[in-house]
Figure 1 (cartoon, rainbow, N blue to C red):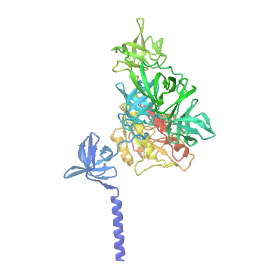
Figure 2: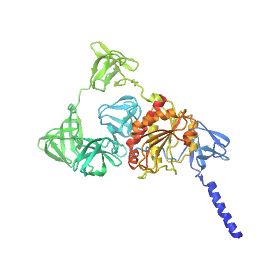
Figure 3: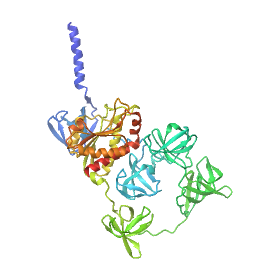
Figure 4: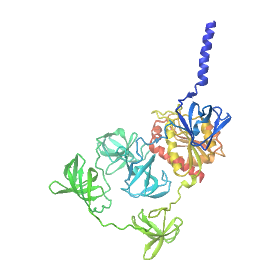
Length: 598
């Protein structure tokens, strides 16, 4: 009997010890943390209820002794230790904030090339940000970073954002091209009897046409199970299950034959054919008659360039047109008389038909409509307008936000929506994390990953707008509900947004929901947010509802919790996991905040 009691006592002791100390994680002495707030309390125990024994300053680094839940014990001196809040320090071995929407590695020294005429260059990653210039077709810029469907570049002495679908990123590290806008196109054949072509990469996208079986297409972008295809008559998204992809050699694509021909350059050029067999045509379009072909490695003389086509001389004085993207050009430049640089300040017209008015407001009469590419000398500035010389000793006014400037160090920009969130303190809370995966979709999608992706996109937009924005977690780490609320209180936040994705046993349930707890404190934010989320997400509107959730119930700041779609719905899971949906939703959250603070 005594032996049995002793055995039971030992088992209970082991279990009790495991229960008491299971949350403690000892750490190697060489692991360190750096303080990331101005002044941080060091406490005698792992919790806010313990007494403050010291204070440490921003930027100071300390060795880690051990961890317990969200608290870290640090070594203050040879004989002194204390506990600090883990969410207010940076761990040296922690991974940096991910770029969740991009799988490719892009070097900071990479080059970004514009593929569009008059591509707008914005102050932030979204169409609501003000236009600060134009990144015109063929121009190059330095790559800085990527956020969803937007790329931050350095161009003409300014930093700003352009839509990734209109640029090519040439990676300096690999010599390759980023998948944001591939220059190498893949040909494919339709295998379905009739394949729907949609406006976006989901079954929610509107139907814009269809393709018949065996039709040949060019794939220019891929997003998950969807491919963006181009033919001479239609462009849009199709499901990849119904395509048989060919080789990775670029296929001849229909270029804009209505583009005004480029003025023949004042150069003598030669080139080398890069395609295995390249068709030579009687004119510079895909509809031109094939008159011959040249093989890979053939040296040709380029007589003329028009759009993306080269008129070449090859063989025994044979002449014809070939697709220029299959020819590597080497150029011997003939000296050309340079136009002297001007020190005058000018405006350059970037939109055909831009209004020039008699006064500095839109209420004044239009005296002229300017053409694309025209330049006018700046006489003076009047608010958000430039007074310009329009010839014949006459002056007029043009809006500073619809033109590009030359020789102006601080061009006029019209404030966009960013003015409403500038300097506002906002907490974005990606739900779940670490061992807490949250909901799991029918295809295995984890809620904790989607919330982090969306949060990072929202963070980038708010940061670009000048907001004081903070994430409760920036990587796959478990953060307690109390710690999330504590971050909001510590930062004196003016808005707290908790991000989640829904799940239920009813596989048909769908849509987005906005939850609030306090009708006076939270409901105004919930109302504005719900309107903008519904506009962008384009899912079923489940409305605004009362929710008794810890992170909004215990929060002193205006706080809401968003459920951004159902992972338990197979169709909706595909939609919410797409990069296009995450970008739209992030834009909706940003818009909701600007409307609330407006």
